[in-house]
Image (tube, rainbow, N blue to C red; front, side, top):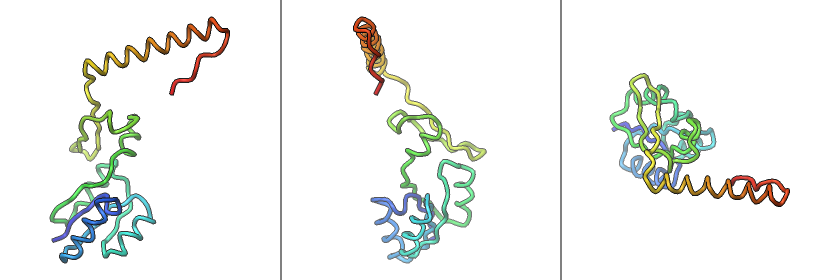
Length: 140
């Protein structure tokens, strides 16, 4: 069987790669860097270096494979679309044209209350700073 594997040099992916190769499967490892490509190649995988956030490119990598195992972390891809972290992402969708789209989580009542509280605390810090004649603290 010919398998496409993303995240092949990660914590879990490395073990999956070795297991697949040990069972005689051909593996096309999708990696982010030449360094990772060298590591995956040592395990006998065919390697392709690219960006999994590029859905069109990733779709092209599926040509000639029998299946795919996706283990790559999507944090960097989500950041490219303006998210601070994956905790803000609800879904990741591969659009028909090959675009990888991240959908934001809908805020819960608790999230909204937290945002309101943070806003109030920031305004309070600004008012205190004005009364002291100093600059307000930078937002973390």
